Length: 167
Image 1 (tube, rainbow, N blue to C red):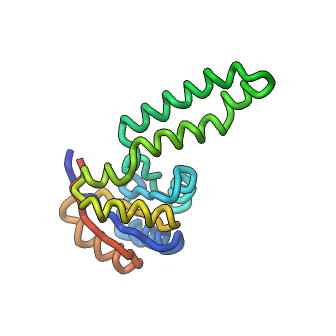
Image 2 (spheres, rainbow, N blue to C red):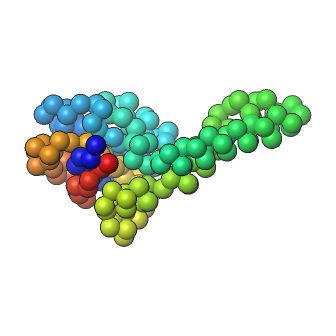
C-alpha cells in the first residue's frame, strides 16, 4: 500500500539521533523509522542506537538482495577450494561483506529514490552525502501525520527534507 515517506538528511549522527528521539516523543514507532548511513554496518549500528530499523528496504531492491545472496554463494563455492583458508573465507565475515557489497552496488539508493518520485539529481546528491558521512532518516507516515513529522525533522536540523510516495 502506498504511503508518504519523509526523507530527511542530517549532517551528523548526533542530529539524526535527536530527530529519532523527537519522533518517538510524538508516537512514531521504531518500525516507522528507517536510517541509512555510509554502509550496512553503520546503518545497523545507528538503527540500534536510535531505536529505528536499518534502511535496507530503502536501499536494497529485491534484485540487489538476490545478487548479493548469489555472490556470497559463488564466493563460498570458490573459496572452499582454497587450501588452508577456503573454509574460513567461505563461512566468515569476508564472504558476508563481499556479498553485501555486491548487493549494495546492484540496488543503489539513487534508483530506489527515483522510483519513489525523487528527482534524479536530488537522489544522486543524497547518495553522495551519505558517502561523505551524512545520515538519511526515512519516516513512513500516514497522511494526517506528515506535517507534524516534517516539523519535527526540520526542527531537529535536517539539511534536506522531502516527502515522497512510497509503495
